[in-house]
Length: 265
Image (cartoon, rainbow, N blue to C red; front, side, top):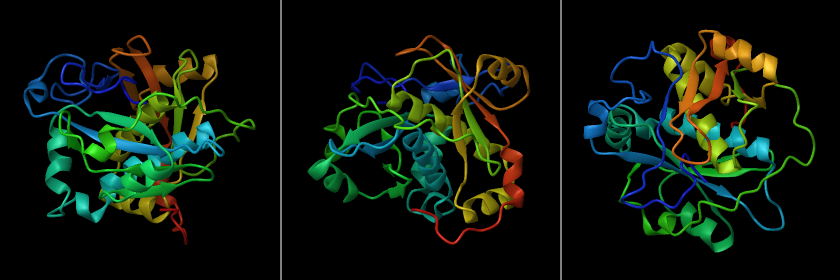
C-alpha cells in the first residue's frame, strides 16, 4: 500500500508525486523531470495502518487519518528546529517526497508501535507515522509488513465534506487501492501545509487538523484542475497512469479555526 503499491527493493522505488502545473519551481520535490533532488540520498515517510480482520477501518476514515498523520509528523516539535527528527525531515524534503503505507495487525501492530513515531486515531482508523527512513534502510519491524491486501470499504456513504479545513478531492476517474489513496492524500495534505504561513499552521494544528477527503464528480473535477489550486500529480509507475490524483481546496480556511479540546493523537 503506497505510492507504488509494490514491495520495496533497491531496484524499485515508490513513485514520487509531481506537480500538475508547469509553474512549479525547477527544484520542486514534485517536479516530473530529473532534478538535483534525484542526486540526493532518497528517503521515504513510512505510514502503517492497523487492519484487524474482525474490524477493518472505513476507507474514507483511513484516508483522513493518514493525511492528518503526515501533518502531525511535519508539525511535531521533534521535526523542526533542532528536534531529533529535524535533520532527517530536511533530508527527506530535500530529495523526492515519497510515502509508503503498510498494514499491520495484532503483534505486528504492537511491534510497530514500539518504534519512535506518532499514532493518529480517527473514527475507526489507526495510523502510525514514523520519521523518514532511507529507501534501503527500513527498520526490520516495518520492512516485514505487507504493502498489499487493503481492500477497505466504506460501510455507509461518506458524509459530505465539512466546512472546516481543506478538502482533499480525489480524481473520480482513478481506481486506487486504499494504500495508494492514503499516500496520495498525504501528498495533498503536505501541499496544503506548504501553502500556509506559520500563524495559519499553528491555528490548524491547534484545531486538530480538521480536513475532509472526498471523490469529486466529473464536472467538479474539471473545475478543480482548471483552477490554481495545489494539485498532486502521480508519476504513474504503479497502479495508475501518470496524472492528477488530488486537488487541495480550502487550505486558506485554517487561519480562523477554533482550537479543539482533543486532537485524537
